[in-house]
Image 1 (cartoon, rainbow, N blue to C red):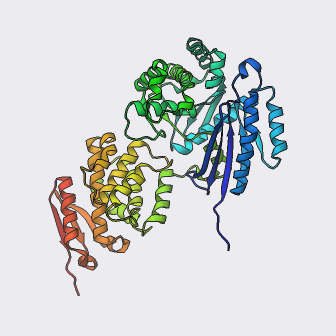
Image 2: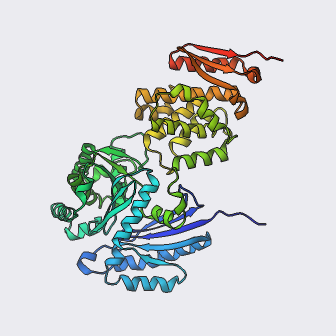
Image 3: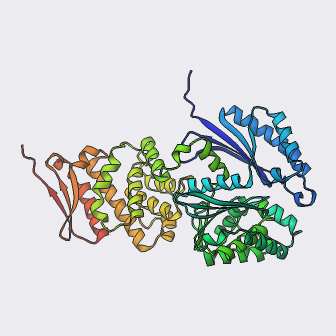
Length: 497
């Protein structure tokens, strides 16, 4: 029996601290990882003193990479490539280690990235995960810190510094005051950093992600998603101060604390604190997409980077889970009259909501609202910031008749202000009314219109659509009017046979 297996690709990120295999499925603007496994090797431990890779890490790496090779080949991943970074490129025995790997798996490309190439891959990863990103990307690993400037017209001014958390700890002999001085000196030597002062700082890499996880837990933040977790400058400074002085035991007690990263936390916090002092960003944004996603966009989906990731995922979900791919465009036009004062971002989110408005059609009716809420709030990857997740999930839960006092809406209640909440509720009620009117068909909805008659909201039903009026349509129109605090009217043109 023949099966149409989607194309798969795989990359191994062989770093100074850990090695990770990611297998992606398909070719898409939004990379879809179907296998993701990490092993901590600490290849770069002791490199500063010895100039060589950690022998224990080398031995472990051969075994782990054998496993990763077998998995990637069994999954028919092509291309499959190993990318080695700071520790391997800087170690005296790095070439011998790579030669041994090539002898063991001669069919696998193994590439030692320069610091500039590593920075460039990370920058593309950020551009993949955060559409429209512009500012400074800082990617911290075990052996190095990559800095690169990104703008709307590309990537610029890449530098690599020996400020990875393992190397910085070794250079400073574990002393944080020495680490501070080393970080200040290395960061201060980057001549172009003043050009990004006051912009956005994007943080990439496992040690920086660990900072975010700890801060999310400490603040009882309502969304446990690191990607797009955003802090203002003063919030970020306060976070680094807390992490530099908090007893290890108090960090260990936090829910979800990354225990294997706790030794690295003070050094990651030191690097970040020195960066904050140097560039004084307006905000700090954590990004989970980096080198591996950059590799994917360069080698698997280079033509997809210019696409909008939110639109792509919404259209894909509509095609898989909805009942009509024609209806979203009609819904967008049908709801225009309700949102005359919206911003460009709000228009974009409303369009995404229209594409996602039927994704619960196959769920159990008793759970559609809650199921849809969680599905959208916790979408993997895709480019939604936290506010967008909260807004879209609320609008779509209301579309499925969620009780506005329901406990499961608490994340949206926390992350949205009153105006945002109201706009999401209004859109959800409008979408609910549209589906009552049309039964989810574009043809019926096109024969109707929402318009303003002075201060009254009017639902007009053309002659061909008079039959759709009924109790559910009337109730839906009244609910929408109450949310807008306006009077409503149903205008049904009689059938002229």
